[in-house]
Length: 249
Image (cartoon, rainbow, N blue to C red; front, side, top):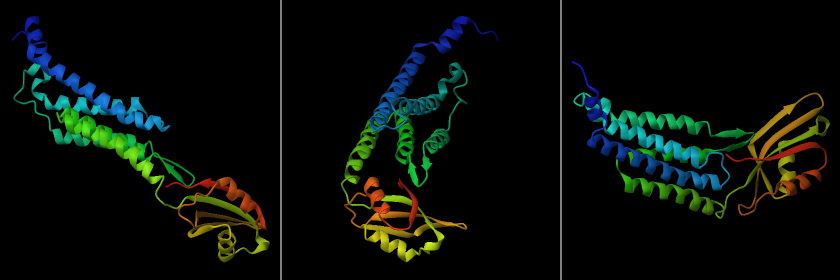
């Protein structure tokens, strides 16, 4: 059975096909705009992943879910009775794939771990796209506003609530000085600093002892300044060298 060009036009460019394509296009634009809104919050805070990354993830999620939702129109709708996509499996695949993308945004440098919020928010942008794709537009807008509000408001609250600010310190002393944990804790406590004894790592060779450990301020409302801590450590006797770096995890 031959198919004429007119039949192909009717199958792929009929009025109903135009309506479906227009709706899917609107879903794509909606996913892009809502994703860009979340991405702007990350971009405004100096994160590498910004509006383009979040917008593309959300738009792609909306496009895939919309495509599966209209599986009856695949291939011109010729086999509409057998074209049925499993929405749950597609959503699972989208979320899993974006989860791998988010995992690549998590960075560990020394004792500092960053990118967790960005990874969680880019995964959330895929959820926004899925909501747009299935037609839950109000829910998608609500999730977007909640996501942006969560990152903005909770960040503001975290900066004002009491917490312990931690640093990672590495000290080098000569073996002849016979340093002990008690001596280390006592010396730094006089500076208003708590040593987390369970974080102490010790490296010893024939001449020096290398101590690595986490420290926090005794007062939860006090921020340990790296420069001030360095000056205080320099006043301690027996220190050959040291290094200080932020410890965020």
